[in-house]
Amino acid sequence: DTAVVLIEMQPRTLDPLKATDAVSQKIGSLIYAPLVRMSSALELEGELAQSWSAKGYRVFRLKLRPALRFHDGSPLKAADVVASLEAYRKDTPHAVAFQNVTRIRAEGELDVVLETSRPQPFLLTDLPIAKIHKRAPGGTLVLGFYETWARAFHCTRGALGRVVGRPIAALDPLLRARDLDPDKRRVWIDDQY
Image (cartoon, rainbow, N blue to C red; front, side, top):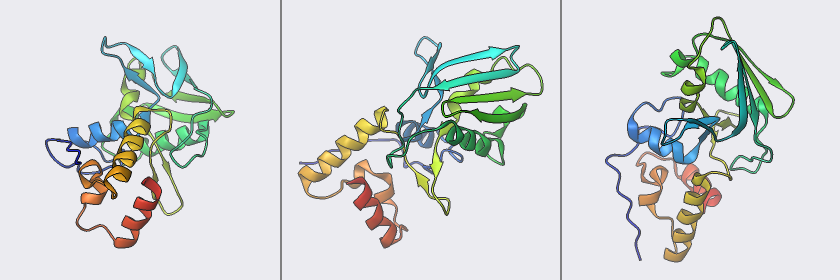
């Protein structure tokens, strides 16, 4: 049995900080999650954040949903969100969305506060571009969250791989990479399948 998934082209990157093409952003949205997203009715709804508030459009407070975990099983904490958002503020294609943000801080384990230099009424609608991620020592990305659709995709991909008896490259862009180091490929397969 074979499963075939068609996409118009291979994503250029799985690194959310560098994803600017449509395919990379779409695949990235299956792997990573934002704090908030826009609904089909173009209304803001929570993904990793369960609630948010804005004071004068200069101080934004987001409360994370409890018990979220990264793909490696480690808990999502406010400090992880701060690290992700700070990474977006640096030299990335998405930094313009954060150009007026002067400070990002964690308050406890579940609260994140963003402060801006001037009122920024559209900051919350810019936040979906920032996918929350974690980097292990050495800069390696730790992929995804258990509590998102990406987890369902991961489980389906793994189950199909077990049925077929091998990983299915069509469902895994990393395995299609021709220049992937064999050791990295083995670690990826061991982790993902």
